[in-house]
Image 1 (cartoon, rainbow, N blue to C red):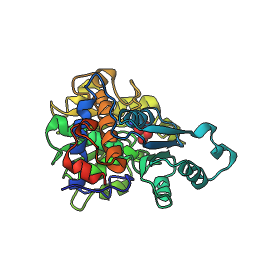
Image 2: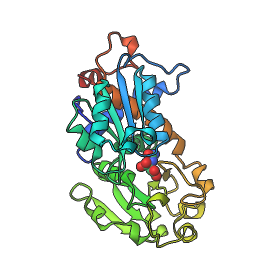
Image 3: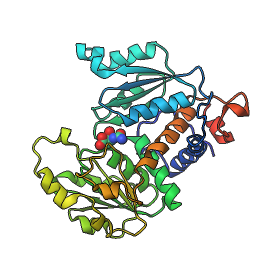
Length: 329
Ligand code: NCD
């Protein structure tokens, strides 16, 4: 059953069926990443506007590359040098971009809810590339694709999310997404980073435990999502970095508390030696680089579904399924 998507603002409103559909649509785009020639003409003539009002490296490059590999052009707003610095409002800035007639807008903003605010005022699809501490839906989708590929399923997994959960939109999007598949969560970190409200974030009946002891949180884990310590968001850190390393760094010894086949994910940027030991980051259980490659596939699938039209000939699409073509209308 095909699904229609107007925007992609978060994983909270998505159903398990919609998520499964999106991940299935990413499969042919995963294969493209292995081809010597990666450029398709699927979105030829389309334009993707990228408006990142907060610093970003991998997410911005990933969206730009996804658009390029589909044959689309990109318009790039350089937030640091933009008229926002001269006092223009967010809405005036995005309306100016919109007047140049892009087909969709990918935006990142430090304010939670900013993409939703913009989506209600523009006619084109808006993709949230991270808003404040609210959501980062494409990160959760690429994490889910990575987990599903390795584990064969998303159903009923034990997921430990480790670190700076308070400031993490990645944690929230993952809780919403994986919660729809009955995953059980242990949120682990210093108590000041474990907001109580996250216990009720998932669908009714979801199991979310807040645990301050790392060995306890890792016991029985199938998946460990390590988060960056967002030093730029810490005003009065209650723990020093040395204390954090001592108590919460994911080390090879601690990893042994999880299941032997547990996966280690990190959304990046990863601070080696702080939240994760390099031996774990580069070890056989790490999926960090696979996540980056899968990010391209997920973003290509999403752009295709939001702004693609049915290809004129089969050669113009990476083995497009009928569903994908239908959903693009
Ligand atoms: C994350 C983000 O910006 O939310 N990074 C990313 O998009 N890959 C996490 C982070 O900045 O720590």
